[in-house]
Length: 454
Image (tube, rainbow, N blue to C red; front, side, top):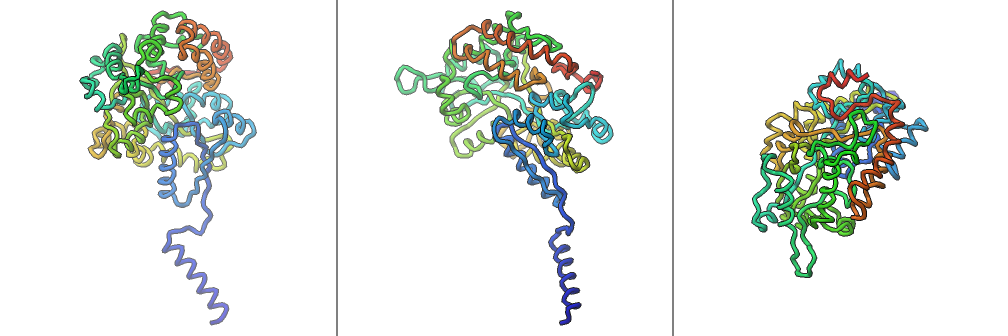
């Protein structure tokens, strides 16, 4: 065979291989995505969605970028150095400063042209709007619930928590927690407890539930001052939250939670009720399928002013260093699309889709193929949820809360003393933020109101 025929044959072979294999001869488009600073189940879901995105978009190669050390501190470092990847996850309580300093792009015009904002719950927009401009496209939502161990409730002779929030109050919750707390081995110390929350101590956002249900908040409406120690009912609610361990003894000791982990204690049958968000589902499902746990889902207990529950939301943003904005925008839309990312995410159980076209679909809300109760999460998101009292400098605020509240959770000071210390630490942070107002307040009710904040 002549050299010319050999060359022709090789060219035809390559073309046929390309056609048969569905592989483009052109180089793949590359997109780098920054992800981190989230609970592990959220990351696992994210990686599954990335795999689905690449399967549907074989011409795109997605590089997942993670950072060592304290994630959001490291994000500040690479942002200052101009090394941000193309796309980054925007967390509701850690991303405000990245909008202010221009680390993520204003995508308002794209959204208003190509997205119907009312397809999403209003909460999913609140953290990502600054001076009436939008910097993130909603991706996920999660609400806190009480998971309960069905067997432990039955063994204690207790009725299961009511699905009517008016019949699941603080007093009924506390009574159940007390009856679920037991000394099983007769050593004089409980080894089964009524309740726990995810961390061993100070949870900034978990504490807010207890205040809101008594009609209280941590800050004034403009977020310029901490009013917590100035409001007796707020202090009382905070005290109740920590008394669950230190006074009523219905929670495991701090060292036990530190050693075992709150969720493993629940899945092992050592806890009757466990506060967590949607992302607890995967671990609970593993325990259930292994025959170790039968669980149910209930509201957070209702306070004197009604039922209010925290919602937490993430979005995707395009960074100032993005090399291909059109490709990045395509990725954002795919992740938020009712037909694509949101529908896929709904099947994974880690989140409640903020896209209401998916969340309110009866096929999702009343999915007979899953054990867990999607309708409960949607009901809370739609009727009882409230965005956490986020501030622009999330890391600094969280640090101030931990420093002020740690002695309270250890039983060394009163709620009033801890609240006063928090005010002392956080008021200077709020005053530094004042020059960047307006930042979206947590109490906004409509999308139009949000965009009117100039």
